[in-house]
Length: 340
Picture 1 (cartoon, one colour):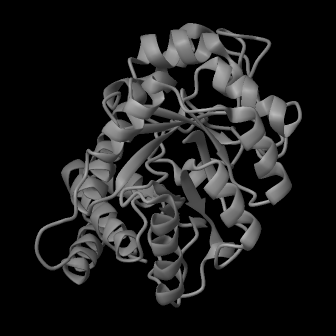
Picture 2 (picture 1 turned 120 degrees about the vertical axis):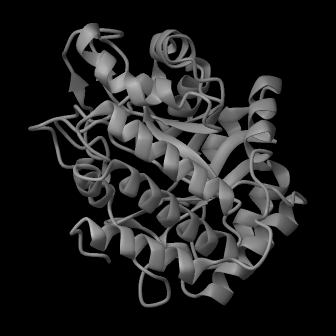
């Protein structure tokens, strides 16, 4: 098995993908809107991924936060609120906001589990900062670290109750970025003391099963390398200062923030200390380059992967999806926030 989560090109596996995955089995997969058409099609695709890997619990990831980051969309699937909706409720009714976030995440998790998806790249633990780029914006749970942590914990709990592993992101914090790391490399130039605010939610939820890195240069820690490629940020900050010992994956290798060729990025990210590289494009030539550069997953990374996937199980009893949605909407409406 290789330390890679791969994206796919289309609605079903292509012949070249089958050949590559047979020769170099990846640790898991990540799905996007281009891979999604209907419930039946998506369930058939995830069943195929389990069949070709021979692993019933193979990680199959998706970014389904709610709001503008949603790969499963209406009319086939329900829309879900942004993080900012729960932040707004928290302003006047913290416990209501926490329960609304938990109900929302469990319903969202049940929706994913129904089509064979068992890992969701949520919650964001990025603390919003006034004046920063909107790449995080309303995706976040607010400007205050304890609030972000409380709502993030509720999301992790709700997803787990539905049989879905949550991924905290973007560790050690993306909220200060002044540009979009999909397009260029953000540089955060504040003191280590100021960055403690960004670390706080991650420290609070350091026992989360999985985390995704941020492609950001933090000058106070390492002024030469983005966090995803920095042994200092990964070793000293993420592993030791935060204390996170779960599975650590990179954000997408194809984002413009990371320098180098596909193979160079793969080697650098793994050497820096990420357990898994995330490659999302589905471009087969790039995937071959990643496989050639990735070698075998380490024993430590494999143990973290297995431990993460063992944190959840299929929920018992009939899924109370409609009841959860109704509860969430009632909680939001009670605080004057318009439900989705």
